[in-house]
Image (cartoon, rainbow, N blue to C red; front, side, top):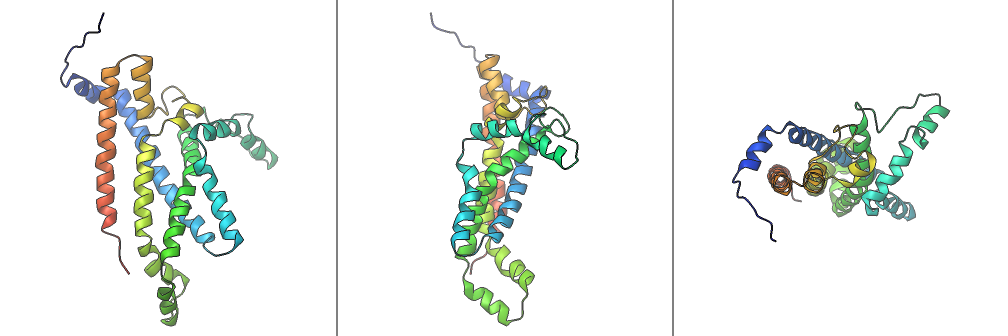
Length: 248
């Protein structure tokens, strides 16, 4: 009446080392995580610099940039799946300006970058708000002193703004890496890991192995590896970025 369990020791972990499909999922996940983190930080910083002034434009811009962040990843995935289909809005717009459309979600050469673009679109709002908060906390006296010393805009950004943005960079990088390594919803809705297993991430691999193929033990081993991977990378990133933080 009760299920029986067999102790297998480290056999699942040994099998993972030889599992090329899991290795591919790790590579796909790492590509998504690192590109999303880098691109979201860059675009978030540029957006924060553009809207870093007072008034209704500041408040409206902050709302516009942050709105995608509060949407469900599933909703975002459905919206962009409509936009990125062969007969979708994006290809129609490209046709209007005389450019040829493409299969954004079925072309194996670009599908992963389509997913990355969608995730960046949703996550850059979080980066923008964090960078805005950090920019607003920098004392204006530092900029006034730099102006008196004859520093131009670029020198003020390089020597004052960017170094003091380090706490915001740390927060954004760690949060984005963690969420990107766990990415699941966007991939399922947009491609379900396809074409084939081209965009299958670790989280999707775990779900498929555990609930589709009913290999719970093997799926649990994958989850442990994912947990350790996120933990190790997060500690390394925090340690490295904390060294760059300066005080004023």
